[in-house]
Length: 238
Ligand SMILES: NC(=O)c1ccc[n+]([C@@H]2O[C@H](COP(=O)([O-])OP(=O)(O)OC[C@H]3O[C@@H](n4cnc5c(N)ncnc54)[C@H](OP(=O)(O)O)[C@@H]3O)[C@@H](O)[C@H]2O)c1
Image (cartoon, rainbow, N blue to C red; front, side, top):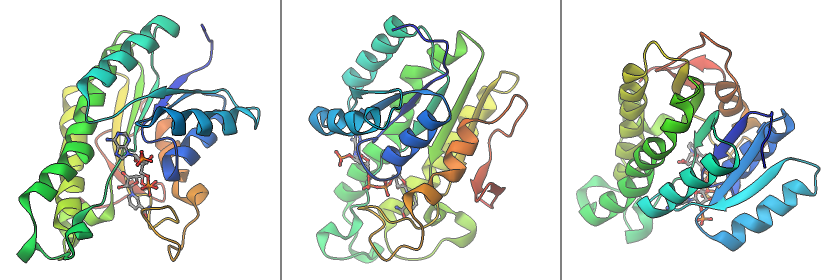
């Protein structure tokens, strides 16, 4: 399945922002690997985009599983021999599942579960796939964060989610710093409040609007920003 196209992986690609980011990257000429923890859901999302005439294939990836990360890395190495773009999009927002959204009753288990996906998931997937970028000295890594993780605007409620997104931003800074001097750029993005299962139907932004900055960061030219946090294509405070 060799390709002259740039190859992009999107995590949590079966719905919401991940699905739309897969669509928009494929529209820009990328070979997209849409990944999903539920293989059947990933397949049907991939087929939907293929039917739109887009170069999208699906692969299983549960970001909480080292095994599926390694399998994906092997698959990409065998099929394409490289990776150009990684969109770390998969995420959960489970704070209020226990009935309260306050830090006063926050359950450590809820925080652990949130970090397992939103933070360690990003670390795991990035560590597994980075060698495929390093070997060609090219890569664009986009970590889908949130304004809810901004320390400069930190408020109450949703402690697990907030802490996880602050931590994702730390991962962005650390990876970007250790990749200084390479052509692998790592940035965080806040997509705004978007109409997805997570964002709900009252959100003001469509998924297409929500992925604009994600796709912009995924397609940055050489010498572009790294170690930054962006919304609407503009740097924002940490
Ligand atoms: N929507 C917003 O307003 C908003 C605002 C700021 C930031 N964000 C961030 O944007 C990203 C996408 O959110 P969304 O709004 O598109 O949410 P969504 O509609 O709830 O989609 C979340 C996606 O993540 C996947 N996922 C969850 N756990 C996973 C795991 N362990 N392994 C692989 N995939 C997993 C889900 O898969 P399943 O279908 O299998 O559950 C789903 O594909 C998240 O990181 C979120 O925090 C969203």
